[in-house]
Image 1 (cartoon, one colour):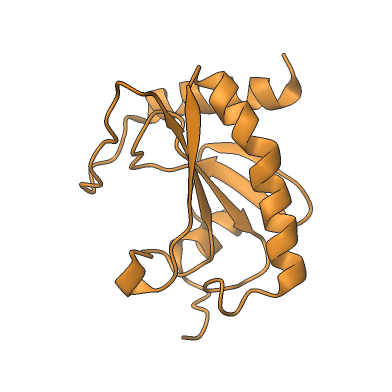
Image 2 (tube, helix red, strand yellow):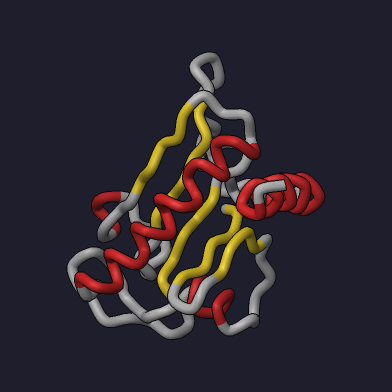
Length: 141
């Protein structure tokens, strides 16, 4: 599969679509999923174009995982979660829906089920409140 420059994440990176950004560095970008499986569900993507794990250069994958590792405790702490689920899907048969490699950081609580992925978007104010909590946790405040 070739990379589609018009996928939703490429458009977010170019500023063509809005998002609730929580983190950015020279090579990665993180923002809230607009259809979260749990409050604080964060997506981490590389700025470099890659479809999946199969075409992502090893150095890019290492950089991406460093950001995931940095953000996971901030998401956990910001959302007062008991744990974190890290997910990454490759190709449609495995559940990949946006063909720009990305990792999901999903806060988890032992007594709260994951929300179904129904295609229903979360309220923007809720997303912005959660994004603010995560940004504060990243900043150490």
